[in-house]
Image (cartoon, rainbow, N blue to C red; front, side, top):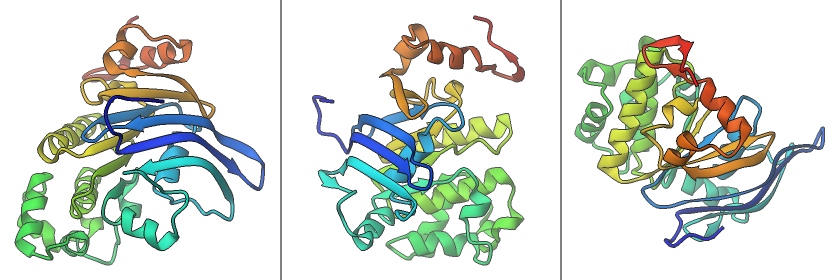
Length: 264
């Protein structure tokens, strides 16, 4: 899969197999992500999209999962380096935003402390600035614990933790799924603003093609661990090549009325 500009991330022939069942979660998937690009992976639950994200971040238990292929990040194959080396990438250059921030944030540490721990400068004023950037305007939030925040505020805190190390790649795995429609839009708008301000690359994992439009540059639609199609977002919406993509497009809720589907 060639492109005319050096890739930040280049995934080649990725396969993921669950050892206990021999089930193939990902079957020979290749794609690239350029610096400062937003790339979305879209598919229904169980399609394999999160398996791709977990493979890139090396968050799988290798005792139960077999991964083959190549995951090149800045020309380093992440599948060949040690866990210690991978941990240094994961804590600085590649950061992961999880679907459930209440499970990812440490319940026994304050929000401010968790952001500070991820930050290279270890400056409280820098933490306050970052919290302001992600919409955590109230200074008292610095001393708050995760359970004291709403779901939307927890996700903002998770984004702040992810940004604290100034990464090159942000992996956002269904970052809006557990939130209501209004808050979903706020979080996507926040990620778009962060992308424009910091010029980092974002890999978005979602089942909802609706949030991809106006946000991502390119999109890969997958089904049963295989690629259905890859294209720029405008082409996908105007002229989907796969019947499965057309089906996902037909399921996008109308803005302001999540129960009413857009007529096709």
